[in-house]
Image 1 (spheres, one colour):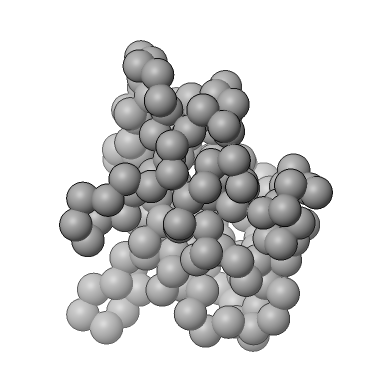
Image 2: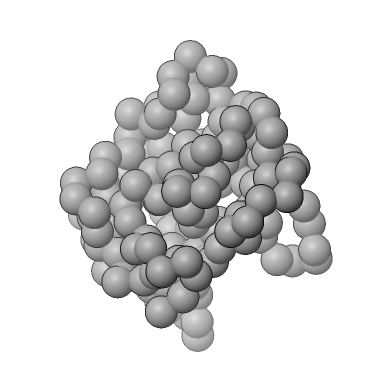
Length: 157
């Protein structure tokens, strides 16, 4: 499920309940009280993990380009950093994102990227995840190469 969607000219929260940015460079997202299909809470750790996973060079996801404006993205893509310096988990339902420079396209990019559960994908080596699989215009998430119970969890409200 993406952070946001776009309906009739307006951004609408999906994972994000609310968001604010004074300058298109510093964003604060408050998350909805969503649960994964196994009943666990969707948290800001899932958001941070998802962004880092999409940018990880071993995952080779084309969707990482949508996050390349986040501070620290070059280092994560190069493998010289494990996590984005521009993503801060404030509490379980709040995440702050800092971009390297203002980017008015950042929110539209968040309508394309699905948030994935750290509790499932965090146990899988990044090199074991495939890049994106395309099914037309639908965004795709990293997918484990081996069969695993619960690996296809999606948020539900």
